[in-house]
Length: 359
Image 1 (cartoon, rainbow, N blue to C red):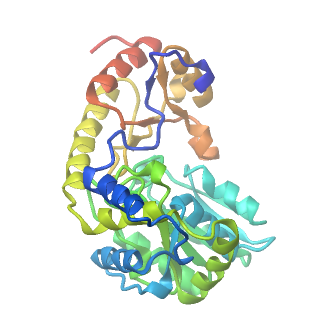
Image 2 (spheres, rainbow, N blue to C red; image 1 turned 60 degrees about the vertical axis):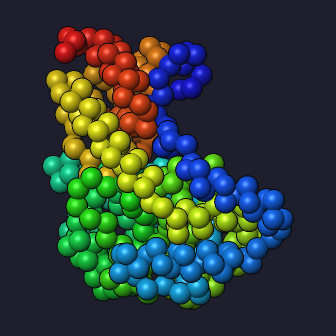
């Protein structure tokens, strides 16, 4: 895809905020370097940061202590740890489809088998408990929740999350809850399933999206004590500890001013409205309630990969829906992590390429 792009291409394919990391966070990292905070930290992370993470999650009704938390090299490592400790060869993992590209691969890496739970546009791409129930077998070991969702922007309602937690309790499987977009929310509320049953859920979160810190590679897990102890063993041998400097930056992000987050989400909301306006007459699209993606249905124009490649050749990068699972075919993911002028220019090209009249 990127090999097809031109130097002046507009990238609406990136899964990262286009904002700079707030100044006070960068200053905290500089201070850490100047003060010599450049050595290994405890495996789980330095204690003040663990406490800050615990305080942060009290907003969601979860009372976690240091023994429940591991600071990781981004949310990606956190996901890897969860899959490694839960999944044995032959186990099944129910994953949202369309869903983030890593889930199925991590299941395979752990020796398990992903089982697709279809997210339907008529349900606003919400994972329904009744659909989950139909997929449960005696091999089901875990289920992945992602709310707000990548790639659809859907937000799980509280009643569905509670019903899925009850299924996990009844059928003895775990929930891996990917919550990296927890603060990027336009409608509804963010509900962590761990607030309902902390002994049945492994929470994955990161500073990447909320504080525009993707390159800082700083995330964390919150899990039952026994799962945390097992994840710590894997963490020790693949990572040892997260970056000390990034940990200091993360502490500043969590305990400092949240004005940046509010401002960023406000701008994303305006971009979302612009994208939905430009999509009218182009493609059907469920209005996202969180994250910074739309997932329009473009099957009328061909296979998702062909449409994405055609747009790339004309200077707009999007992601083919099939990358997100078998039920992603017929869609493309458009990220609005780009300024409004670029979004408008991109849609001028999209409309022209798809042979539609200008607005």
